[in-house]
Picture 1 (cartoon, rainbow, N blue to C red):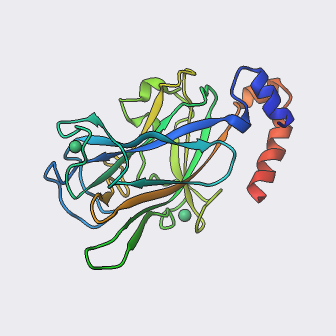
Picture 2: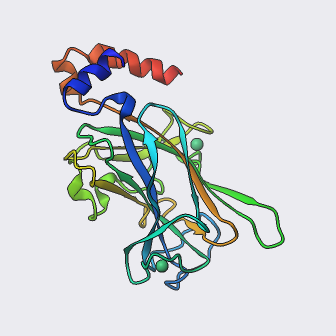
Amino acid sequence: MNKLAVIIAAMGVTGLASAQLQISIGVRETHAGGGPEVGVGGNGGSAGGIEWINLDGQTLNLNGTWQQFTFTFATDPVTGFAGATANGVLDGNYGVLENIRIRNLGGHTIPLNLWIDGVTNTYTPVGGSPVSVNFGSFENYDPGTRVMFQLPNFSGSTAGFLTPTPNIAQVTSNYAFEGSNSYNVQFGFNSPAQTNWLRLTTFNTVNSPNPLIRFDQNSQLTFWMRGEVVPEPGTMAALGLGTLALIRRRRNKKA
Ligand SMILES: [Ca+2]
Ligand SMILES: [Ca+2]
């Protein structure tokens, strides 16, 4: 464990090496709700209930590496979340990616910095070959643009679990898994309670809202995330760590 991680651990916060979040998704059953069957990634609307897929079943290590998350609709566990059709059974042939659920497994109370890239739905039409649609590359938008995911505090379901700042969601060119851009989300949990979570919702976002995904045809949703724990500048200065953190960030960015 490096010097920064040791000091952060001594402050009562999970050390960088073991810092984790649980990642799952909520999907809205727009087919069951009477919503339109547009193409994958198109605006599927906001009709229908929301189910969790593989609730809290995967982990993001906050170590600055890109990690892939995969959801397989035919076989992953389904857990009801909200709405009339949320019954633990996936209804309809398609729906929309309503949210990424980010649970505070590591008990974090300092700001978290996440990046998302390559949001892709892969499915196999009957009698055909697999089709992959990457509708979340973030390559067609300028840095600073809000795309697909709303601000962290947008959802009333989870705003009460978050600190007022940071509250950032925008395209960035600082890191990318593929291409030049990814999507950066910055937020903080206001308590170390491991039950707290963030509903990072796609609900009616100005660009690329409510993206449609298939549930049938051996459909899988995949995306990549990387994450870091970012001590607050004030804390860093008080500990005389500002320069160290700056060096670390520069080194990470080059890598
Ligand atoms: Ca259902
Ligand atoms: Ca990209």
